[in-house]
View 1 (cartoon, rainbow, N blue to C red):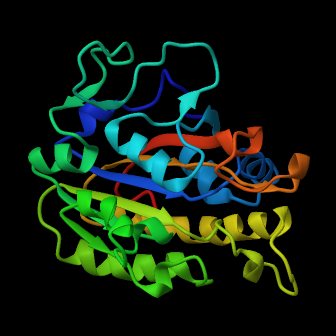
View 2 (view 1 turned 180 degrees about the vertical axis):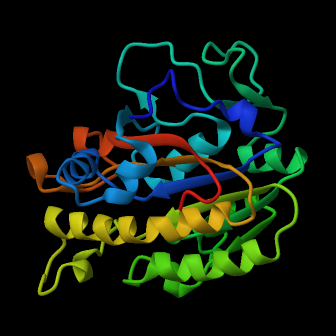
Amino acid sequence: MVTAASRPRFADAVGPCDILFVTLDTLRYDVAVSLAASGRTPAVVRAAGAWERRHSPGSFTYAAHHAFFAGFLPTPVTPGPHPRPYAAAFPGSETTDDDTWVFDAPDLPSGLAAAGYRTVCLGGVGFFTRRTPLGSVLPGLFTESHWEPGFGVTAPGCLDAQLDRLTEIVAGAAGPLFVFVNVAALHQPNRHYLPGARDDSLASHAAALEYVDSRLPRLFQLMTSRGRACHTVMCSDHGTAYGEDGYHGHRVAHEVVWTVPYAEFLLTPGAW
């Protein structure tokens, strides 16, 4: 299990390592933990050991990712303060310390670009499509961004399509690389991952996670194929409700929405 004490420092990764940030959009903590315990997500367990239980700073994609990119990742549920792995410079912050990588920029992609990184966004859900001004805000933070319908919420092979694009990106990459992947599979609709399902449910949500886990080895192999270690952050941005207390969906203040899985680990070349 990767614990806070054993977790690699983000500050040590900047420069020597490539950096991978994966958001499993809409993944519920309870589903993630249940599948890990039952052996249905072996890649997650192999890479991270176990999911951490955390609270998201936002109840839907747009809000949560703005916070993530400013340095406000999901917060441990235990009493704090909890120093952050990275943070935009902000006078008076009580959650930065000597282990925090502080950048003088408004967001992580800009901060890493200033540190010499090629920053790449592989979008998934609607806030990353660049089809509208609103859908252009988050991908516009990156040096380059990629999206096509095959990456989106209605495509059963969405992560496969993103990895096909990443294969092209990695092949032509020189110098440090920061890759952000927003995985759309868990988001509604996800019933296409459960044969015969007519509606989205916790069962189809779980089946979507199994699909994603089956593709993670390819993602991790691609990110270490250049012979560089890769510091990885993987988490959900928020959960979603399937009828709990009468709620459906997210953008509501409910426990199944605010509670998310989080993992941070180092990928080494040749391990995948």
